[in-house]
Image 1 (cartoon, one colour):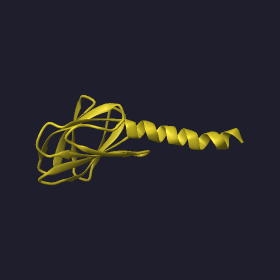
Image 2: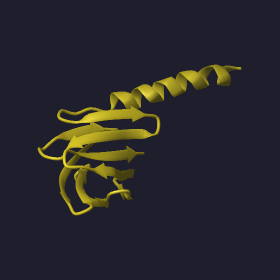
Image 3: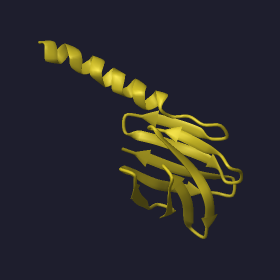
Image 4: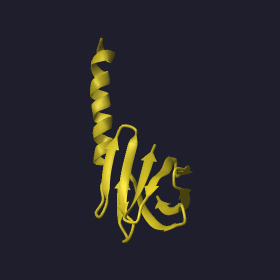
Length: 105
């Protein structure tokens, strides 16, 4: 009985930790239990702190976004994913105005 009562409370606390862990100036974040989606402006030096790490767009060349995640520089093609510092990092889309990145634990 105690297990059933604590499961919803634990789930709510985990959700609060993930949502509280997302944020940054110049970008928009949408966080949930499965990670964060970050919309960076394509121009500028916006950085965001998500899930306890800092992420930013370094640049875009062709169909590949150059990102810095927790101090590690990575290149991720649009629609692709890679691992960085224990997180899965994907680039959902790149437009003239924005770069949309997905970070999952």
